[in-house]
Image 1 (cartoon, helix red, strand yellow):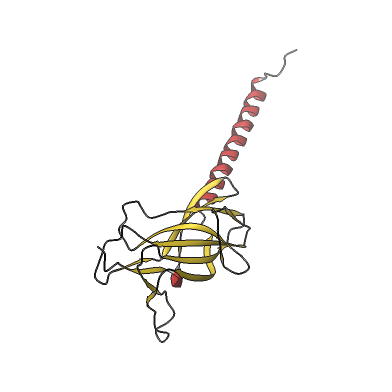
Image 2 (cartoon, helix red, strand yellow; image 1 turned 30 degrees about the vertical axis):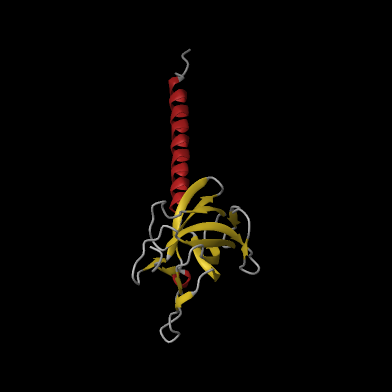
Length: 196
């Protein structure tokens, strides 16, 4: 009596394992592309507070609201506290922001990050702690723009920072960055005109 060859079972099992591995690899690839391709962050309510800076000019109300321009002063800061909305269906954690380069000579440097009070949009002093934002939720961060001590003098020139590149993780695993426009919250500062 002849028995059925076992090679068919081995081939079928091998094909099933390979198909399962291909499906798993496809799901991992899709998950990675989804997690790293998201642009879930946008700005909500905000407050701006100059520290050691005076206003150079305001956009006239007749034209529309807009960012205020500040006069450069050593040690001055433009503190912007903003709600960050997470439009993704998974939690994200804000971990940092890109800062201007060391040899940057514009009137403004930064931003450095601080935490903000969700109830009052006031900055919280102390070192920055990561901000976890639930799906369709809000977190609060404070962006501190500094009067750049290396600023190049310029007659009437200004520096505008109208967006910030935030670093975040998705599901506390996938690291990504996103440029978030600041709109009316843009930091605008005139170049120093003396002491150059």
